[in-house]
Structure formats: C-alpha cells, structure tokens
Image 1 (cartoon, helix red, strand yellow):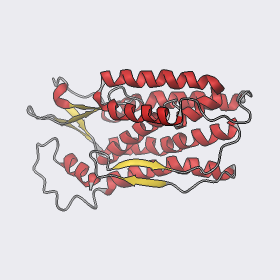
Image 2 (tube, one colour):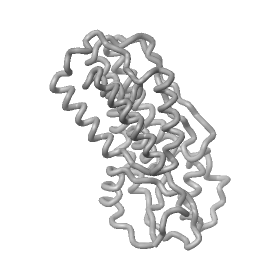
Image 3 (cartoon, one colour):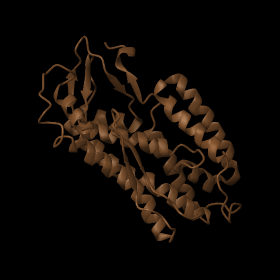
Image 4 (cartoon, one colour):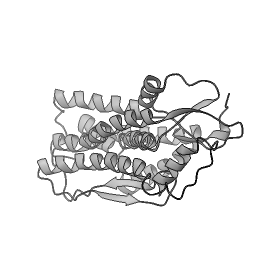
Length: 275
C-alpha cells in the first residue's frame, strides 16, 4: 500500500496532474516494495549466510512491516543465538550485511533514477525533501544532469526504495555498540571501540539539532546503549589485531558509510527555499 501511494505521487508530478489512485495501489506498489524487500533481504541474508559459513546458530531473517509513511517497514533482523567467538568471525558477519545490501541498492538506484524525471515544482507545492547521500548525488547527476531552477527530480518508487536502502546502510554502519558498524569497530579497535561508541552517540545528539528527522533514531541509540551498555561483548582474541585484508575491508565500509550518509534525511519542503 505504501508503495502504491509512492507510485500515485510519482504519476501526479508533485500535484500537477490529477490521478485516480484506485488502480495503482497494489500492482504498481511492487516497484517500491519488491525493491526495498530485496535490499533489506540481501542485507540480512549477508549476515545469515556468513553465520552459516562459520556454523553460528542463527535464525532466518524476520521482516517488520509497519503502517507508517513513507517506508511501510521498520526493516528486518536476524537472531544470532550464540556468542561470536573471534574477531575475524565478528567482523565478517558484521560487514557482510551492509556489503550485500549495498550491492543490491546501487543497481536499484541506477534503475530508479533512470525511471525518474525532472519536473517543475508548482508554486504552492509543499511536501518532503529527501536529503541526498553523496552516491545519490553522483548517480543523479550522471543520469538526470543538473537540475534547473524551479525543478526537482520526481523520484520513481524504485528510486525511493534505493534511497531508503542507502540510508538504512548508513544507519547500520554507525560505529555504535551492537549495530553492524559497532561490530566492525570492535573487531578493528578492540576495547577502544567503547570511546568510538560514546563519541558517535554524542554526534547523533548533535545531528538532532541539524535535522529533526534524527530525533527518533538518536533516542533509539541512547536506549540501546543504556540497556546493553556502551562496551561491546568481548571475544576470546580481543588483544589480537585484524589481518591486513580485513583492515582494508573496514576502510571500504567507512567509504560506504560516507557515500550513503546524509546529515538531513527528511525535511519539510516548506522549510527549504525553492528558487
């Protein structure tokens, strides 16, 4: 249903066209829902298959539908039923999810922006403006070119799913506690990752002053840190550094975070100047 609403908004061209939504909601909603489920599913199966490779007891992915705009979902997760014993295992399991999701999100982004179009904004238009991660800006410029004054990219639902996939990848790569980025940081830095967790939590608080769209995420992070503590569970080889290959992959994960991150994910368009 959320995907159908996205398609209806896409066809309406920022309200310039009157579209009957009845026939669009379910079949056309697959443009969004199939894409976002593919990205989230790839992410979780990256974790799952790596756990199976290391013979770690793990559940299949759980998907969380939610009747909320504009995502229709609260994501997905797996349940790891036993402690992860070594840092290489922890690193591989933690980084596999973001890499797998990113590999699916990038072609979805290219396809989604190829299906999108530049549309003139009505003078009285109000809505939401999506913060554009660096990768989104690069691909948008390559496909759509520069955006003329008074125009905006009318994002196809597949493009929106890819945008959300990039944002989800960035959120998971935050180097905090039990997030994927927290696992990577602990594997790379050992006990020093606790300081990274606290520093990133402080940065998350500062981001709420930059954009109100960070408030809910930051509250969830703080609750997680309070409930589970800022220190990552120890592995038996905490004092042994990662090998060079995994350190290079960790740098790649940092680059992926930079490409997917945006400081203001969602803002009311009425608060943004329109030429």
